[in-house]
Amino acid sequence: SWALDVYKRQGYSGPVTVEVEFDGSSILSVHVLSHSETVNISDRAIDEIPSQIVEAQTWDVDAVSSATFTSDAIREAVRDCLAQAALR
Image 1: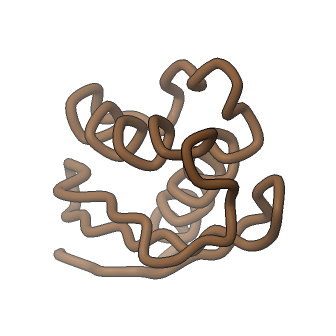
Image 2 (image 1 turned 180 degrees about the vertical axis):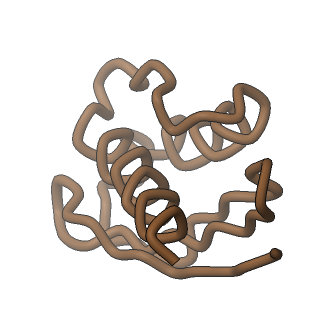
């Protein structure tokens, strides 16, 4: 079954809101909808982590150095989303 969920997790400067689209067997897309992270510092994490998660088909990808809090917020949002989906 297909689902689309939105999760918020704490980043460095505030909440990071992440949208995760998935079906029963794969992560289809990950998008950062909003954040209050520091521009230029968090940009690489916001640009790269979502596509790395989709490509690897796991939330457990490497954090972007110098943007660990932002990376962790995105990864944890996806992890929690998939964990909740498994309970359904």
